[in-house]
Image (tube, rainbow, N blue to C red; front, side, top):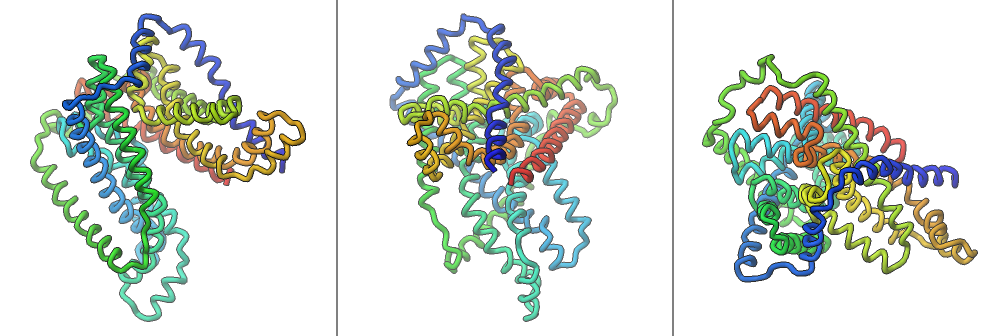
Length: 500
């Protein structure tokens, strides 16, 4: 048993070896002209701009971000639950529907889930122009699929005998279905749904960097004019929003036996569905398709993408996701293990929070001030951001773990670092790797963000093709992105199953 734990522990640190070639390329690409800007950026964090004008701007921008994040979350949660029900086995057993439809719906959800919301946002902006609604729609498309997957996994645990018991009293099938799925849906919402609201707000911020609106747009505009004091004002206000929302979410409790709450949730459920359909129809028929007048360009064969170059971009995207995943896996346990004291842990937690707080495109733009665009720089950016996320989980699990083995090893005279490694981390390594396997699915989709700005991989090609309105190329790039994400999800699913 100890041998297995040691193997999982070793696997957690082994990926850090990718930093050797990655670090070499970063050092060779470095230029010292931007260090002064980077220094100014860091100093401005302790001296943000505060006056009446910017406070009003912060409030307005936060309101826009919260609106985009909240409505996209509400719609994606409700439609995610609907798609979860119609893509679960229990639905087809109750209504005696052929499983053929079940496979089609799951395939459809897998495809739209495989493409990041930023990609959806960029494509929709190119078709419809900059529009407040684009942010909501772009977030909803993949989030509905992600939420439906999580809800469906819980519905699959329902025992079909429960329906048979209800069916004996000749209850309507729809009522039977609602009775069976209600508690699993509500329980999943309590454990997962509120977390998705924070994710929606973060996605709204990132889309804002591409012009959708909200605080993300203000962050990007401040960076463009190198007004770092103003930039940090927006970043710290975003930090306050995230911290407060996290505290509020922890206080919210749902009582599934409360009839008034149940009626309220059902009312919100149906109102949101009706509003979403009506607004979607209004959006479709009241927007011009200036840059997308016909579907015919999709079927033209005169592609400018060379096969060799296209395969190179695919390979770059795969390598980018692997390098980023390696950094996200190994960096947190390595840093925590080396700097294993209370003071260092506080600084690590603060630094990890900043990596989660600062949007990935902004981190990359800051690093570009003193380093040339490269695959290594994009991988470092994406890896650091996700390391901030994986470190939060690792800290949470380590803080809640039984420390008796760690204390016993220290009392025997074993060094503090070795005691931490074998007495604490080794017990968490397996579950930590399982979470990192899940996180790698997200990293694959996030390569689009750094690709667009860092001029690497399929993200760069997507931006170029959209800029020239080459919709046939855009279609091929999206298919390639989707295929990589789906294959990665299948591989990671196998890894997760072996670790659980």
